[in-house]
Image 1 (cartoon, protein in one colour):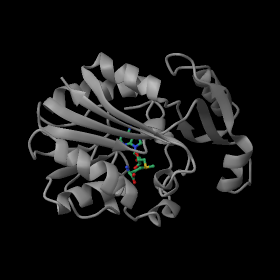
Image 2 (tube, protein in one colour; image 1 turned 60 degrees about the vertical axis):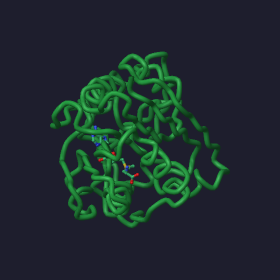
Image 3 (cartoon, protein in one colour; image 1 turned 180 degrees about the horizontal axis):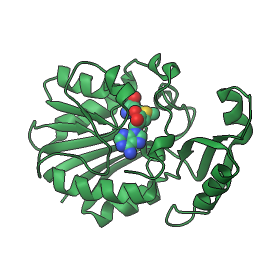
Image 4 (cartoon, helix red, strand yellow; image 1 turned 90 degrees about the vertical axis):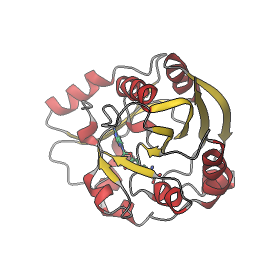
Length: 243
Ligand SMILES: C[S@@+](CC[C@H](N)C(=O)[O-])C[C@H]1O[C@@H](n2cnc3c(N)ncnc32)[C@H](O)[C@@H]1O
């Protein structure tokens, strides 16, 4: 279990209104990727949220499992196959999947947990299978917290108390000390975001036997990025093949 997974805030009603497929992503990235899988086998959506992509894939005949650590997200998900689990310890037999994807979630997974995630994927994905990564580009650590006795609304707190830390080479930084300081002072941390750059993710993936096949970078002005339901910021999409 991640040391900071409890800080995630996806159990908020406001996120559920974002429940619409992203057509540019589906038609230009997701479906062509699924078609390129070595055989039309099973797909794992690692951080599925409400399972929108999993639902789309299943509708097209790809048996897809939606996994997520948030009960609330899965509870409000499409009634497809859902597994309440985090990315660090996925409960599947070796070589259960031809493909796996993670969309708009890597910033919430700590560098340490990402190592566990890639180790698990190395075990779960069949040789020559594929991993599709879609992530916001984030070069800084961000800690969102509510100071002790604050009456500010959540949205104001995000704007007012965001703390930024430059990414170190490994993605670790002085954030653990910062978290200790905030909690020792009686503050409440409700979300942590970690750096996620193509270089960081690619470096970790390669250590676990994944080779880059294709990488696309999107700036905030492209239609693909603007149609992203989570954060219309720059992002990268990386297709990795398992050796
Ligand atoms: C921004 S949402 C994206 C959900 C979905 N992929 C989409 O595009 O709509 C991020 C999701 O990642 C999940 N998540 C964050 N950390 C996770 C972890 N360690 N293990 C599994 N899921 C995680 C959250 O619960 C949330 O549903």
